Amino acid sequence: MSRHFEHLLSQRTKSMRGNAIRDILKVVSQPGMISLAGGIPAPESFPLEQMYTINDTVLDKYGTTALQYDFTEGFTPLRHALVDFVAQKGIQTTFDDITVYNGSQSVLDLIGKILITPNDLVALESPSYLGAISAFNAYEPDYIAIDTDDDGIIPESLEQVLSKHSIKFIYIVSTFQNPTGRTLTHKRRQQMAEIVKQHGVLVVEDDPYSALRFRGEPVLPFYTYAPENTIYVSTVSKTFAPGLRVGFCIAPPVIREWLSIAKQGADLHTNTYAQALASEYLTGGYAEEQLPKIINLYKPRQEAMLDAMERYLPNTYHWTKPDGGMFIWVEGPDGVDAEQLYWKAVERKIAFVPGKFFFINPDQGLGTMRLNFTKIDEETIDHAIKILSEVIRDNS
Image 1 (cartoon, one colour):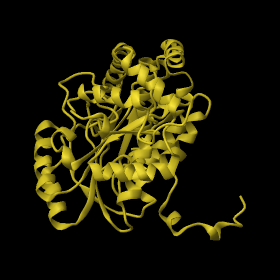
Image 2 (image 1 turned 90 degrees about the vertical axis):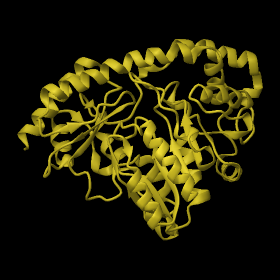
Image 3 (image 1 turned 180 degrees about the vertical axis):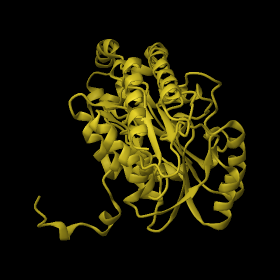
């Protein structure tokens, strides 16, 4: 590759790095590779048959409007549909409060653009979603980790962080977190809300997975506990079609205004046709029909993985047992290097994600790994965990 123009790159690029997981996942395309790695919905979860009807309805209902430039804030029918969509989660909001984006990832990037000045402190769960860190990195923040356990953020750690530091905002994945699968409990949400209100701090709540609940009682989004202090970010990618790239957010007025200004400069508006399809999917009864199918597809796959781990993995390993989502988090004993295990597993055609890439401090999480169960069937999952356990035992 020619480096003739490298001197033209901005100072900002020094803080931008390629997504390490995407580099690791390149091996997934190798013939015969079984992937427990990417957080990718199963193709069988897509409403392919219904899409023919949805597509025809969109063309009949909206005609050329669905093919035209549109409002920066989003396609009007979709914004109305999203008001009802989030109401099912317990969020009471209005049409004017919702803005639609090209996937929730673009929301995170624009949040970074309008809020982060170089060396601002952003507080994160540890470990945290790598995609958010990648989005924020371009704006050159510093990070500080909030301690977590199986119930999510530890309130005492949050209080300590906010008492000692001036934080620009807190970023959380509140339900079925990526990478751990953990959910911030109702009690912890209450405690966290009181703390952030007391300190007047902003929370960015990323909520892509909460609809994928297999068991247990739903927990209201953190937004409902502290709406004036929260930017709520979500998507239809996990329950409709990720390739359409339809995400949205609800934010305090001044933040919402600046996000729209930044969006105008970034992409003018979100894909109108994709928004029209999403609108019909939500309002035409398709979502209510499809979601149970997705749950019935993923639940036995998660159970197969948990059962296989119980049978095959050494008792020195521990893992989360989420009530939904897409991931299981595994912690090995001291001295384990999960990245070395990864390359050994790849030799045997099994791929996963070493957990250290989800930590701010690269020295943390060396013995951890993230496993995904959504994209392969139960029999294949059992085989993959058996092989992974053999790799672990052979290299312990």
